[in-house]
Amino acid sequence: MASPFADPAFHRDRYPTYAALRATSPVVQVPMGGVGTATVVTGYHAARRAFTAPLSKDTGAYFADKPSGRSLHPAVARTMLATDPPEHTRLRRLVAKAFSTAVVDGLRPYIRSLAEELTDHWEPGAEVDLIAELAAPLPVIVICQLLGVPPADRDSISGWSTDLFATGDHDRIDSASHALAGYLAELIATRRTVPDGSLLSGLIAVRDGDSGRLGEDELLSLAVLLLVAGHETTSAAIGNAVLALLRHPDDLRTLAACPDRIPAAVDELLRYDAPVSIATWRWAPEAVRLEGHEIPAGSPVFVCPGAANRDPARFADPDRLDLDRPDSAGHLAFGHGIHRCVGAPLAHAEIEIVLRVLLERFPDLQPAVPPGQLSWRHSRLVRGLVSLPVRP
Image (cartoon, rainbow, N blue to C red):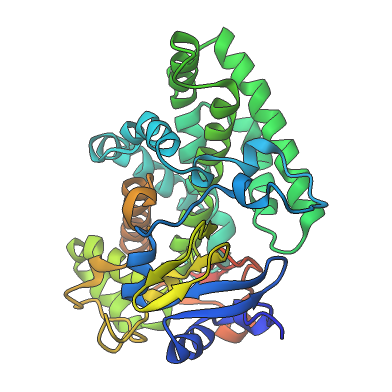
């Protein structure tokens, strides 16, 4: 039996597949390409529980005794996302302060000026690809600025990062992992000699100042994770949010007229079409009971925030975009528990600021192509558009 996620139609619209799985059971065993049978969690309450259940994210332990033809760079294969406490706790503590609400608030003027700069050349009525011109470059520039990546290297970073999410194309993924890790290793060596006050220089200082806290491999893997996770999902979230508003023009006009409603609207937009559709890898070292369902020992576990956020057992009329929904902030788009996205405050701010700038400058924004002509990324993890042609 083929995986339910292998159908090309799944990438265009995942929600019918999620609904069918959830109707069978919120926790179900399904075939999953490359790993045999896996546990897929689609119900909200089960997903929230799975995020805090005794499941492991240690992919090294899972694949240690399994043959593999892959050549993924270790810095990409074993990031903080692929670790368990206490290692995960120690690593997360090192980077959490860089994404605090206070730090993000300090970045808001920079993010806004960047959004304005990227849209300055848009002409009313002329077709623009919102992904290529705004949603993709803005998060890349912001995270590269934080990490001290030179502007001339941003396009390379963006290309390697995109390749890392090319589901099924193992050669492309593996090649990109080595290119990105090699680049960052050189940048670390440069920043060790010439510090620049960036987040990367700060992490190097931790490494050099106290070698017992942050090892060289950990430093490289953290740099990889922050660079990739810091923009891919945010880019997808911006595109998904704008598309949802284009498909609901009354809501778009409401936000254009009442911009103070945008922060709360961001949560509903994240719930409605989450950029992380299927969360990163988990597995069960021992059998686990989850909402009355047993996950067998050794089973890979795929928690689906995109499905959980459309669970009618949690959200009334979940397939409807409702900017007045009172409980949108309960979405799982950023995960939950100890692995909740450390960059959530920054991502939320970037989406909010982009929407403010767009709706202030282009309150009559229109789609330039019918929905059926839109192309979606072929990634199991990320739900996002390849392009979004619009007319300002």
